[in-house]
Length: 429
Ligand code: AMP
Image 1 (cartoon, rainbow, N blue to C red):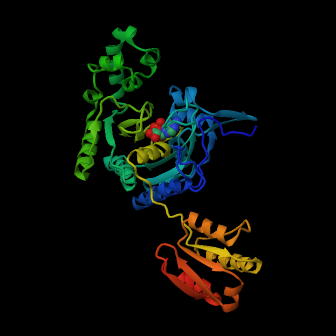
Image 2 (image 1 turned 120 degrees about the horizontal axis):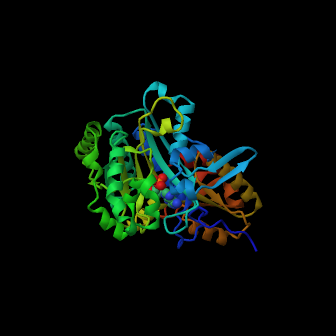
Image 3 (image 1 turned 60 degrees about the horizontal axis):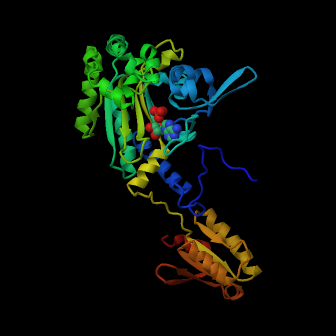
């Protein structure tokens, strides 16, 4: 028996090779999505950061939080010698690590983006994998609500650049150290008399991490929470002003949002703004992207001074699901500019040499690798939908003239074998 990929992972194949009934997009589409993301990130003046896929386990345990599902149940972690490694389940903690390690705070705020794989041992299902791929961005060293809006605006711009429109932005403010303890206590006071009605998970969260109960999916708990105290009633003046400013600026930009008092994002280090971008169309895993402000993370990771920061993270797999639902295919030009059909060995050698020269000039050229008949080579050129086809044989090499046929118009051009590379390149492709 041959080997298979591990459950919850997948291979990404070129369009020409992939099974079109598979939900996994082709590498051509993947590349096109990345190009769009990079273009938007660059326009917003974010620079790319690439951090390792393995990180110290403790960085993730502290950064993401011991009480989260990610750390308590889903880490791919291992030990070698006396070092504990984890395959990163997210990229924010690694970015903050790099920011602190390289003293990136010296020159003012840093605007960083990333693209790459993450790993979580979750139960695989539609839109949920064990190796998945994120893109995201962080503004580090800026406390102003403008930074929150910069991040949200950037995130929306990425999805708009893809041609998507069927998404909803939900936002909330989680307050800060001055308001959170009072809210936690009020929520616990409200929930304790209903302890019997809570699920096993929520019971375990009640004392240590009661805010997590707010994003329950359980209908009974949802109903119970309808009358629970709201964090908005507990916000201190500064958090309130910050949240007002964020909402005002989003309004000014025409970015639609809904306020959701139950949006928490789970992690203890989040302060003030929290947000999620949701699609109704991608099934149970509806969160396309999410993020928020995390002013406490740097000190949690050992920094002397706090680093006010805000960011978002998004999944490629769910982006592709949303694209499929809205029937958008990212246009990718993958057709050969030219297919050389060779008749005979001498012609084949000529074709190999000239294809190489053209390819070195950036022209996409294909040729036969199977010593097929002229007819079979023509069939291949058609199958690949080559823009031009040129047949090269003894006669053409003797006469010094080659015919290039434009396959969509039927128009034919004669180019001399001596100057074929320059002449083909100078034609408008
Ligand atoms: P999180 O870091 O949990 O806030 O996730 C941010 C985004 O990453 C989500 O909105 C999803 O798009 C994506 N994501 C998270 N976990 C997975 C997973 N297991 N499989 C696929 N995408 C995921």
